[in-house]
Length: 355
Image (cartoon, rainbow, N blue to C red; front, side):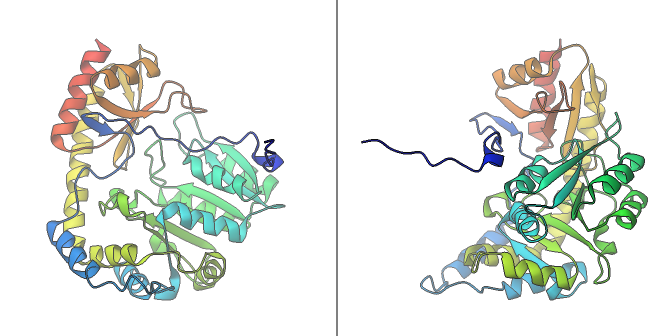
């Protein structure tokens, strides 16, 4: 039987998917997950509520209680909150609404790969600006890209993934004053940084901030993220997102997590302390360590090929992220901050590989 393969869209033929290796190892520090599980009290409360779920009924389409909890956490109104299946669906919905064919999205590289990837999936053109050699934002380059491309959506990632750099508030304010369309500040790692752009959100400002429950809330397995932005923007996103997109389990998980803010902040403080210990120990080795305000550290070996270092660590059952083949990141590697025990195993393995 002859099978005709229907061709994909021309603009997707050369597109590669987003991949992160999932390998069975003793120490897994490659995807920036929290090394700590949620509190036992959260697990018990989640199990109790799940036992009462009416599985034959659709979930609350508006995720009313979850949005109200997120709004209370950040001191905004519920109509300024949009929740979705991970922050990637937040970004996808935003780009389906405000990007697409005939429109342009601006990114400043290197940055989170899915900003440009999802934009291209919608049919939008992506204008890539260049960061400085130390990965800081070049405001003159931002001004040039925005003037030439006139994007409807501009992305900033702070702390930036994969570099870890936090955008200074002055930079974000200056970019916000320049954008011809929307500014989306991706704060997937925002709780690890010393400041947040959430304080700039207002109904009169064309800016939104996206966040996730995956990192600081220790809920990567639930795939839950959200956006805080102007109410008029949230209203448009609600028109585009699929109905009943947030299942009842996610809504319960997220709502209950918000009861444990103190425990979340304790985990963040522990990770930040470990990040600084890790960075100091790595600085004594033959690697260049980039400053980080996230739960990971980007580094570049000085005398070895990055891929060889990555493989040497994997041979010792330590998995980190190989960024060495990414544009602008030759020989760079990224390690997630783990538990103290995991971090010690990583440091020992790295020292052996670099000898």
